Length: 145
Figure 1: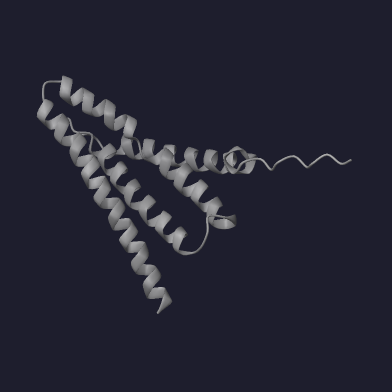
Figure 2: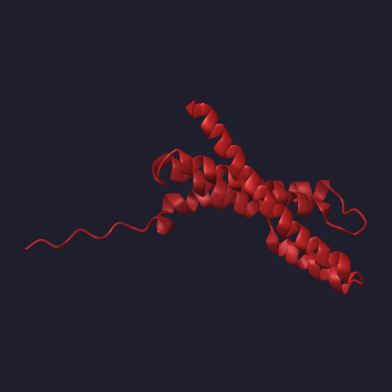
Protein backbone atom coordinates (compact mmCIF):
# COMPACT_ATOMS: atom_id res chain seq x y z
CA UNK A 1 0.00 0.00 0.00
CA UNK A 2 1.40 3.39 -0.98
CA UNK A 3 0.84 6.56 0.92
CA UNK A 4 -0.58 9.44 -1.06
CA UNK A 5 1.76 12.24 -2.00
CA UNK A 6 1.45 15.28 0.25
CA UNK A 7 -0.81 18.02 -1.08
CA UNK A 8 1.06 20.81 -2.79
CA UNK A 9 1.65 23.86 -0.64
CA UNK A 10 -0.94 26.60 -1.27
CA UNK A 11 0.37 29.43 -3.45
CA UNK A 12 0.14 32.00 -0.66
CA UNK A 13 2.36 29.79 1.53
CA UNK A 14 4.97 28.94 -1.11
CA UNK A 15 8.37 30.39 -0.28
CA UNK A 16 8.77 31.70 -3.84
CA UNK A 17 5.51 33.68 -3.50
CA UNK A 18 6.47 35.03 -0.10
CA UNK A 19 9.87 36.09 -1.43
CA UNK A 20 8.30 37.91 -4.41
CA UNK A 21 5.96 39.85 -2.11
CA UNK A 22 8.82 40.60 0.28
CA UNK A 23 11.09 41.97 -2.46
CA UNK A 24 8.31 43.99 -4.09
CA UNK A 25 7.06 45.30 -0.75
CA UNK A 26 10.53 46.37 0.29
CA UNK A 27 11.02 48.31 -2.96
CA UNK A 28 7.54 49.86 -2.75
CA UNK A 29 8.02 50.93 0.86
CA UNK A 30 11.43 52.44 0.05
CA UNK A 31 9.96 54.37 -2.89
CA UNK A 32 7.10 55.66 -0.71
CA UNK A 33 9.45 56.76 2.04
CA UNK A 34 11.75 58.54 -0.43
CA UNK A 35 8.82 60.42 -1.98
CA UNK A 36 7.24 61.28 1.36
CA UNK A 37 10.55 62.75 2.52
CA UNK A 38 11.09 64.64 -0.76
CA UNK A 39 7.62 66.22 -0.99
CA UNK A 40 6.78 68.44 1.98
CA UNK A 41 3.23 68.99 3.25
CA UNK A 42 1.42 71.97 1.74
CA UNK A 43 -0.51 73.99 4.26
CA UNK A 44 -0.37 71.06 6.69
CA UNK A 45 -1.83 68.68 4.09
CA UNK A 46 0.36 65.63 3.37
CA UNK A 47 0.25 65.89 -0.43
CA UNK A 48 2.97 63.25 -0.83
CA UNK A 49 0.80 60.56 0.77
CA UNK A 50 -2.19 61.70 -1.30
CA UNK A 51 -0.18 61.48 -4.54
CA UNK A 52 1.40 58.16 -3.58
CA UNK A 53 -2.00 56.58 -2.96
CA UNK A 54 -3.43 57.95 -6.23
CA UNK A 55 -0.46 56.84 -8.34
CA UNK A 56 -0.52 53.45 -6.61
CA UNK A 57 -4.23 53.01 -7.37
CA UNK A 58 -3.66 53.92 -11.04
CA UNK A 59 -0.72 51.53 -11.27
CA UNK A 60 -2.53 48.65 -9.59
CA UNK A 61 -5.66 49.05 -11.73
CA UNK A 62 -3.57 49.09 -14.88
CA UNK A 63 -1.37 46.17 -13.82
CA UNK A 64 -4.17 43.85 -12.79
CA UNK A 65 -6.23 44.61 -15.90
CA UNK A 66 -3.24 44.06 -18.18
CA UNK A 67 -2.35 40.77 -16.48
CA UNK A 68 -5.92 39.47 -16.49
CA UNK A 69 -6.28 40.17 -20.22
CA UNK A 70 -3.21 38.05 -20.94
CA UNK A 71 -4.58 34.88 -19.37
CA UNK A 72 -5.07 33.02 -16.11
CA UNK A 73 -3.27 33.97 -12.91
CA UNK A 74 -0.48 31.42 -13.26
CA UNK A 75 3.23 31.24 -13.99
CA UNK A 76 4.83 34.54 -14.98
CA UNK A 77 1.56 36.50 -14.62
CA UNK A 78 1.14 35.32 -11.04
CA UNK A 79 4.75 36.16 -10.26
CA UNK A 80 4.32 39.68 -11.68
CA UNK A 81 1.08 40.16 -9.74
CA UNK A 82 2.76 39.08 -6.50
CA UNK A 83 5.94 41.12 -7.07
CA UNK A 84 4.42 44.30 -8.48
CA UNK A 85 0.81 44.22 -7.29
CA UNK A 86 0.76 42.67 -3.85
CA UNK A 87 4.38 43.53 -3.08
CA UNK A 88 5.36 46.83 -4.68
CA UNK A 89 1.94 48.51 -4.81
CA UNK A 90 1.07 47.15 -1.38
CA UNK A 91 4.25 48.63 0.09
CA UNK A 92 4.02 51.84 -1.94
CA UNK A 93 0.44 52.78 -1.07
CA UNK A 94 -0.36 53.57 2.52
CA UNK A 95 -3.88 53.83 3.73
CA UNK A 96 -2.63 53.55 7.30
CA UNK A 97 -0.80 56.87 6.81
CA UNK A 98 -4.01 58.25 5.29
CA UNK A 99 -5.85 57.27 8.48
CA UNK A 100 -3.19 58.80 10.73
CA UNK A 101 -2.93 61.98 8.63
CA UNK A 102 -6.72 62.31 8.63
CA UNK A 103 -6.79 61.89 12.39
CA UNK A 104 -4.09 64.55 12.84
CA UNK A 105 -5.95 66.98 10.59
CA UNK A 106 -9.30 66.32 12.28
CA UNK A 107 -7.99 66.57 15.83
CA UNK A 108 -5.61 69.40 14.97
CA UNK A 109 -8.42 71.89 14.64
CA UNK A 110 -9.50 71.57 11.02
CA UNK A 111 -11.99 68.72 10.91
CA UNK A 112 -13.40 69.84 7.56
CA UNK A 113 -9.99 69.65 5.85
CA UNK A 114 -9.31 66.26 7.45
CA UNK A 115 -12.59 64.77 6.28
CA UNK A 116 -12.18 66.33 2.83
CA UNK A 117 -8.64 64.92 2.59
CA UNK A 118 -9.85 61.42 3.45
CA UNK A 119 -12.85 61.52 1.11
CA UNK A 120 -10.83 63.03 -1.74
CA UNK A 121 -8.14 60.36 -1.39
CA UNK A 122 -10.67 57.54 -1.56
CA UNK A 123 -12.74 59.10 -4.38
CA UNK A 124 -9.77 60.13 -6.53
CA UNK A 125 -8.11 56.77 -5.79
CA UNK A 126 -11.19 54.94 -7.06
CA UNK A 127 -11.21 57.13 -10.17
CA UNK A 128 -7.49 56.45 -10.67
CA UNK A 129 -8.10 52.71 -10.42
CA UNK A 130 -10.87 52.85 -13.02
CA UNK A 131 -8.62 55.01 -15.22
CA UNK A 132 -5.80 52.46 -14.91
CA UNK A 133 -8.18 49.66 -15.88
CA UNK A 134 -9.44 51.66 -18.88
CA UNK A 135 -5.89 52.48 -20.02
CA UNK A 136 -4.80 48.85 -19.86
CA UNK A 137 -7.96 47.70 -21.64
CA UNK A 138 -7.40 50.30 -24.35
CA UNK A 139 -3.78 49.21 -24.86
CA UNK A 140 -4.93 45.59 -25.10
CA UNK A 141 -7.60 46.42 -27.70
CA UNK A 142 -5.09 48.42 -29.81
CA UNK A 143 -2.61 45.53 -29.68
CA UNK A 144 -5.26 43.04 -30.84
CA UNK A 145 -6.13 45.04 -33.96
